[in-house]
Length: 326
Image (tube, rainbow, N blue to C red; front, side, top):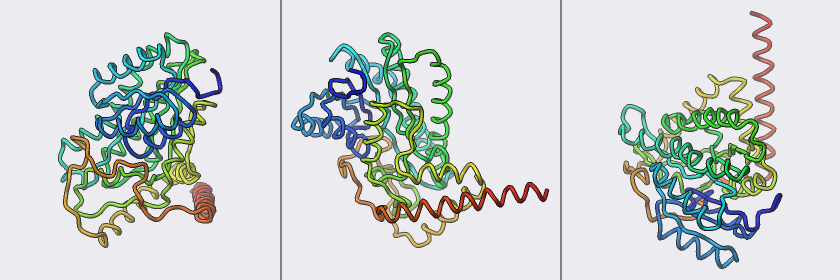
């Protein structure tokens, strides 16, 4: 079964919408055995039926990733279904936006519990099975937010930075387990319903910052990671360039993103404050795409790449010049 996806048991958390849903469809086409997990059982059942029509077998497993006991039950259920777990995709995540001190403390906690501890809990649940089998692939949909901070999203940023550190540590711990792979995905901004589901304490309508990519780029990266596992992938060319820009001038990047956010909030339409899907699942916009604009066209991607590359080179030369003059 090496280098193929058919009949591999794949667990996907956060499968009900966005990148998780796109990944389910992608792997259904490859005839994987899918274990779909999220808090919304009704939506999972609808997704499972669509995947079965494509021609794959599906197990629905309603699960809250903030509950470690439930995550271990998910692993047991997946293993007992087919006698093994080949791939585990950590994907469930939430977003909360607002001024740090004005946002409810419980919202900060929920973001950390879902985005950070939920992923750690997934690893905690599945690694014993991988070690028993001597093989397995753990794929983490982390986000470029692990390198570039999100002003007014402090807990989100903390969770993503921490995920990068945790999985780097775990990769070192698994040295010697040649059949076990951890793959971290760092996509740029995605056109998912996630921003519509977000906890929003800003009083303004939230929109993703361009460039905005189709979530299928994550699904394609998951597929590639199963076939050819590698430590890191950057779905959407912009994310790697953002990482390079941050490594060259982190303070400049933070100030610029902060100024951009402040500028947006000055002109954004008003919106009611809401907890979104932080504390319970929602029943709207449970789709793959969120229909955000602007989408990034091929020409736009080329122009963005050239612009970011030029900015990175310019920043690098500027910093080198500063060091020489010091």
